[in-house]
Image (tube, rainbow, N blue to C red):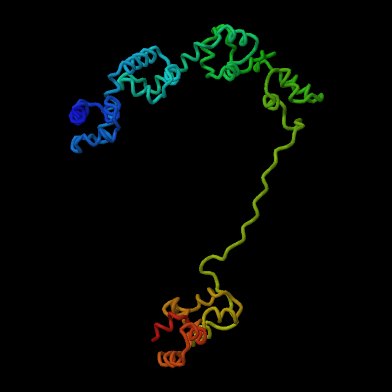
Length: 331
């Protein structure tokens, strides 16, 4: 009975010291629900504070101190994080959490250290032997899965072959070429490429020493002359003669005929008719559209009569040839 009365006080004391609910329940041999029931609600820690307290409690344990010491020692030796985590059997995130942020390596430093350690494991004697036998630096880098510059640093300078082609010695300098000999041998039938190979020059150099009259190559193609441009009538030239005079065109236009209809009757372009009409008498676009497409003569009274017969707006629009919007606007 005395133990039952002392249990709440013991639970509160251990919880206030920083122990978690699980630790208190394990120490006292009760369930976590019992521990939570004896801890006042205002003293219970939230999830973040509880996690922080668990981490603080775990850091003080001997096992955690020994693990942190090993992590720091192996990390300072220069090993990458992945190898240290694999050696200790923990994750990279757990390894990073146990390191001081000020002592963590940057990405650039970690990459340089990884390349350096990988280069130290390369067999230098074997690389030199393969290079002497004819292997290139690029092929060796692809074989050992490193950059060619890493292979280059492990080969002595006297074994590095120069890049590019080996220059071929000239049989005769250019300024010592005998033009007469070149022309004589070219007339005898030798090609310019054979002469260029023998004298150690380019075929263009041989071509420059042979007159055009003796050259057997294809002549240069001449660009065809452009076709003559058709003559355009200059501004102010005489107008086109029409079958009807300009006064007749203006009379028909004032009577209500469109320029397109007049041009169709005469057989000319519409713009030709418009040039015969003064600008102050030309119709606007809206006037021309209204003239070319006259609306049916239906007023509001007719529309109401059709509606009284029971026709819908769509039926009336189909009957009179107008849109429903136009019909509603005329009401």
